[in-house]
Image (cartoon, rainbow, N blue to C red; front, side, top):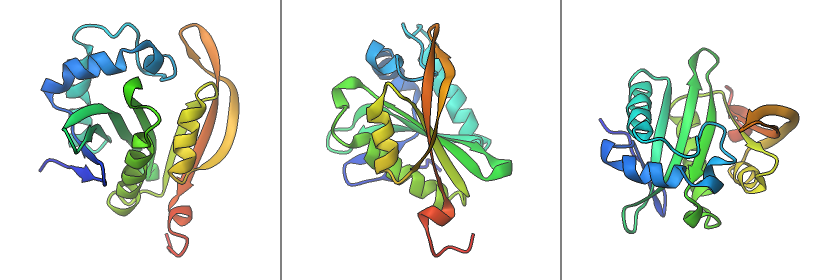
Length: 183
């Protein structure tokens, strides 16, 4: 069964091998890669195909779910959103990126809200968290608008391209998500 999630404007579906060229183009943009820890720049040939296969394997084994963010209106792939699971602790990290042409339209927030719902209501997670470099306030805004609470800032916590970066952390527990829940 192919897991698909829907929102008003978006289809969130697994990546397919034929998405590789679009992934390479969008994720390889300097503006996208510069504030996303795991994205290289330039994006190497063959890396998108390897990444798609790896994320598909992770989903098969319950380690994470990675979705292509696709516009329902015209089936245009715009970016990626994922939950990377730590099953033992019933928690997941929310991560995402969008091609720069799609920034500022609420797509990341819409996708994040749906994936958070999936995580709590279908995967029975206890906690979902996300992080954003402080120099990327738009990403922090996505996490806030998706319902996550700011938990702190860690100074020079990561290194991206030989530069140490401050990172803001956000989180949401099932009791924050569903205040009447007994979980």
